[in-house]
Length: 394
Image 1: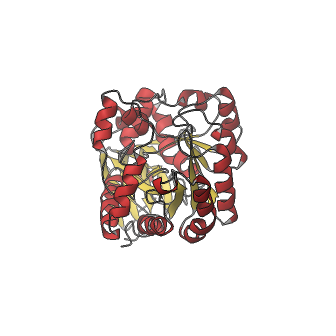
Image 2: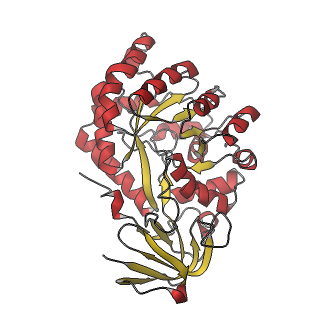
Image 3: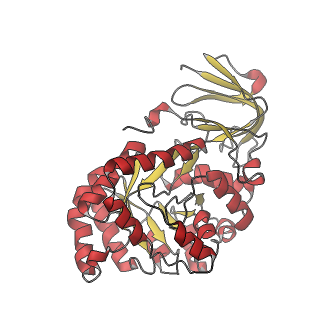
């Protein structure tokens, strides 16, 4: 492709205060952007844009950084729409349906898992997601978790081992045996295939003490820690996440003042997943309390078949604005730069000079339309750096 200049951008959100209006959004108006196949080369007024090999007239549309979806469960088989219907009729969500997805995923061929994941990845890309984290966790055997990680690696370099999703049925009477399997044979097999390790630390899943053992063993094996925490109840997992310097602690539905104080004084990102609250009729996380205390917030889809079958980051942004008292600017930043920080990346989530050239051209004059017009796909074009490699390596 060579170089590309995008001109006549009505509103360009860079997330770089040195380039724009000095807010965290770094917004420019009547702007232009020059990129090559890998990174951002120039940002400035449209009438000062340098020549490039190719030109794209944005025709008064807005441009934002590519969305960074830092929490997904894309590798699975089956569906659980009956559970959704039951919850909408008043049945309380308790996470128990994961065992159904485990059964369906174990029974699927690798080709079926790849095909299903490819469809969901394609939906994310069409919706402007340029970087996505993908977890295992729906087979819970050594061979099965290896297989899920192999599939995930077809689509992303941000791969997470989640063997500690729940204790599988065959180990319900031998919980300690499964913990031993996790921290020995399964970890040894899965660590070379993943970047991150995650644990579902919550009521009905794994305790704080169990999560500590798993994450410390994972770190010793070269994996960086993340944590599902406080989705179903207050568990004490936030304190563990901060103590272990987890890159991100995700869900955070139930928070006490001490949890917020800990997060605001740490490098651990609070990743909020409002699609899960929407899909389970649960209370939404306290985004406003977190932000006002100075904690860093990310937003992600939590795409999974049970509690958040969501592939639209625009919908997540709209929920964050409508239900969690975030401004549009805060929600957009959290869905881009916040997600990048949750993956401990500084090359994505913004459009500063030298950043990856991951951007989204919206079919709208302002980024606010992402929340203002929920339900439609406003993404006119998703542009993704070739440095990331092919989205689908199959």
